[in-house]
Image (cartoon, rainbow, N blue to C red; front, side, top):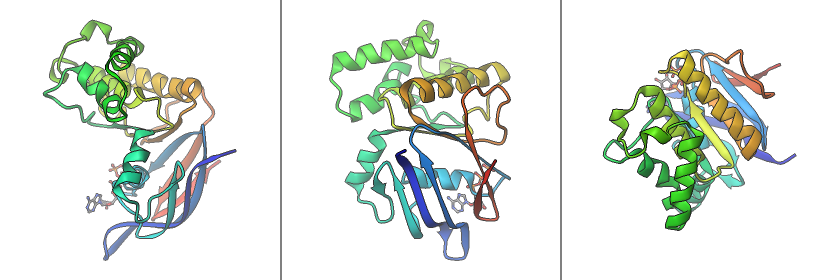
Amino acid sequence: MDKVIIADNLSLSYSKEETIINKVSFSINSGSFVFITGASGSGKSTLLKSLYGALKPVEGSLVVAGVELKGVTKSKLNLLRKHTGIVFQDYKLVKEWTIEKNIMLPLIISGYDKSVTQNQVDSLLKHVRLKHQAGKYPKELSGGEQQRVAMARALSHNPVLILADEPTGNLDDYSSQLIWNLLEGANEQLKSTVIVVTHHIPETMKVDYQHFHIEYGRINEVT
Ligand SMILES: Nc1ncnc2c1ncn2[C@@H]1O[C@H](COP(=O)(O)OP(=O)(O)OP(=O)(O)O)[C@@H](O)[C@H]1O
């Protein structure tokens, strides 16, 4: 099976004084659903940041979707981001844009033509059950609805890899379940690899998943 992520002796840090992730090696197969847990401050978000190239390895090697991120060039990183959808706990929507324009962003960056983009946005709004909110701005939506917009944006360009950092951290049980369903659907139907940082793995998960736990800078698979 293809590996979508290969970390070899990977270390991550923000300063010379402190190493957050310390010489870890692991790999993730294409099409997997993966949870990353760990105590607050253990380095979960730091590891996720490295997977989308926001933090470069200080040691070792990290290959994501065939791109080596140690010393990666800007153009290679842009290429990787065209294959990646990212969901954050605080949604990170552009507040001056309608929800449609927010969803369109990855499609515009990927160079889709306007009619494809419009059709795709319409079907994504339906998919995340927000058709009735078309034309609105993020601040006119509830937190759960905003996170569904963020999910639609992450799914819009059929990403190989979806990275989610505590995507349900601010949501009630109902909205959380919708997000888990959308992530499971992306994994099952689009065959996207999904990697989720979370404090709690939901009991309702239907897909098979792997679980990695971070502690003291090391990563262990929980079996
Ligand atoms: N931009 C940054 N600059 C310097 N240090 C940082 C930065 N971001 C995080 N850290 C430090 O790195 C360590 C790991 O932080 P990280 O956000 O990865 O933890 P986490 O496991 O995601 O925590 P939480 O569950 O609380 O979100 C912490 O000690 C934190 O203070």
